[in-house]
Image 1 (cartoon, rainbow, N blue to C red):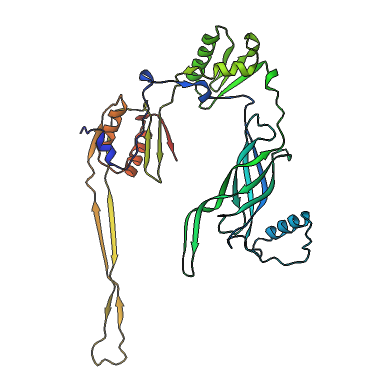
Image 2 (cartoon, rainbow, N blue to C red):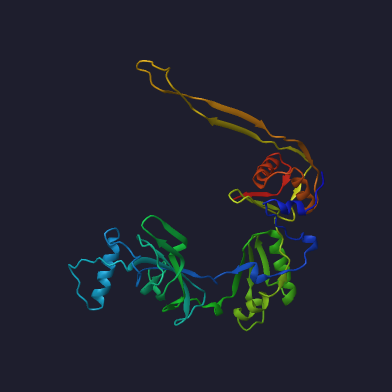
Length: 372
């Protein structure tokens, strides 16, 4: 019943593991495990126009907002187009999104993403016209402009269309300039919180101990599984920024929960190193039903009066019962043993996902089961 680990590699399932906590070969820096309270970005969004498209822009009859925006833009530039009819196909209305990073200063540049909102077919070769970017408070924090790098290409003919990627969305690296700064006085903070990206009591306790050992003072205190509070007044650091620069590079061994993650669409299976399975018997078999229609045309007898051909239905049906045996998955204590026990059934990745669900329902899979 035992099989080597390479047998699982032959199947389409992807089994990814991490070393067990007792054999942890490396540690992670605190800055890779936590978010610092107050150090965060802000989302920006704006509405603009992309021009210079090669006939792949919005159809102005189907996208009247594009014509209205184009009219307003030309009038701001001193061109009166009131009452004129636009029929151009080289303009597309787009939504521009960006993330304003923490401590961004006026004059700095940030990356932006551009996506069409009308019926434009491609943004390839287009140029985004000056677009203000607003935050949730309605204020303008950046202005975007530049040549769009489209994420795909589309070719259309009289009878068919071929599209690769997503030509209706693109990016502009460093395409927006910061015009307004977010007021945040980091230097006056006397207390600070570290928010764990993956809340865990053991990891939070290790972070608390590592920080206190590093400074020799009880400046860190674990509040819960996701928060470690820092008392900056107990340190002699010149500023909170200096303190963060010292503690964010402290290495800590993070603790991980036992998880099994499956993706039913692709058949991907991910097992954590701490996954344990109690001894359980599994039977896996397949039932295949085949139904085939073969209608037959019956002609009338020769010299019959008023005779006409008729169609007689003919159906062939069969049932195949798969050879589903009963396999014993023994109590496993290591990840290779879990893999060998499951792979001993010799099933496909999608069937293995169903088996893992059944083992979890039976109470023999001791891990968090996540289905995507």
